[in-house]
Length: 206
Image 1 (tube, rainbow, N blue to C red):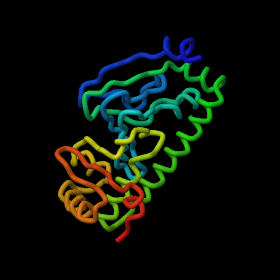
Image 2: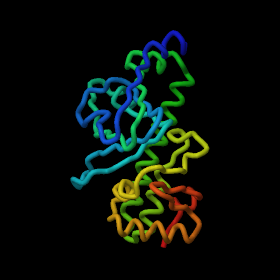
Image 3: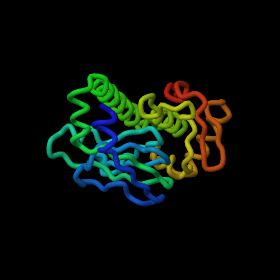
């Protein structure tokens, strides 16, 4: 089925850093995967502020819009690095969904995982203690299906972008990072953060 259905329906696009993969309210063009680089997804929250998610190589997006007939993209997607994206055309996506039990099961697990991720993120962003908020937000970022690689905890994006993800100021974010590094939960590098204990970050409370 891969040779017959998937290969002819895959397109590859290279997106420079800072450029849009798509915009809110665009019609979906297919199921989108990140082959190389990182992407920022910005969704409007109920309070008018943007909710930011990050995706890295191995992440796939857009299945919810494809499954809802007539739905449009509900977020902006911006390349954080020079990025290579894959797009699986909608007809091939739906054929796989209908004809491949393994693919259908993967979609169910992916959507359940993403729902849990959003719940963790929303809960984390309610924390009044900044270090707890940063820890729990970073812990919510990594999920097994969206980040399947052994180095998934290596976040090669700026601290400014991560501060936006956690919805805290850059200065407060830096203070929280240093505290979490002292507790050996992560390591701060140049334009990168290595999450050493994702479960510990998720459970962090002060």
